[in-house]
Structures are given as C-alpha cells and as structure tokens.
Length: 68
Image (cartoon, rainbow, N blue to C red; front, side, top):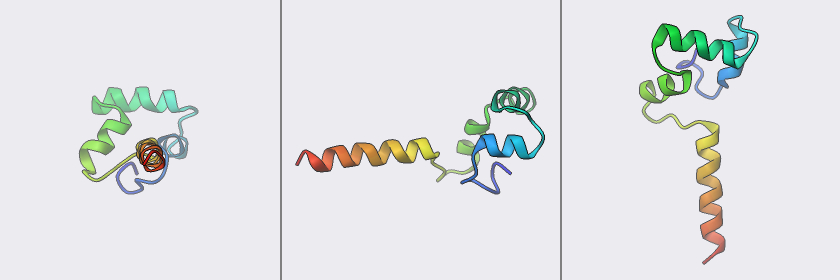
C-alpha cells in the first residue's frame, strides 16, 4: 500500500491494515523492514515527495517570489 497509494497518508495505511496508531504501525514496520515507512517510500519511489516536503517547497518558493 505504501507504494501503490503514494498520496495516502502513512497513518491511513496503518489504520487500514489494523494498527491503532501511527506509532504502533511505525514500530512494527521498522522491526520488519528495518526502516521507517517514510524512508521505505522515499527509497522505492524515486519521485515521491511527502505532503510535508511539497508544502515546504511551496512555502519557500512563495516566500522568495514575494521578496522580488
């Protein structure tokens, strides 16, 4: 699911597969895969950017465009 639905949040995926919290999903994923769900996505989807990354880029480009 992490790779099939890259726009779906990690929390949403964790809940869909039966975890009660994002931290429980994160711990179980880390134990099995030896990396975080986000790191797994980033390594396996080369063009993947999280919503936070997209917002950070949007905010920084907006800041610079207003300063010109």
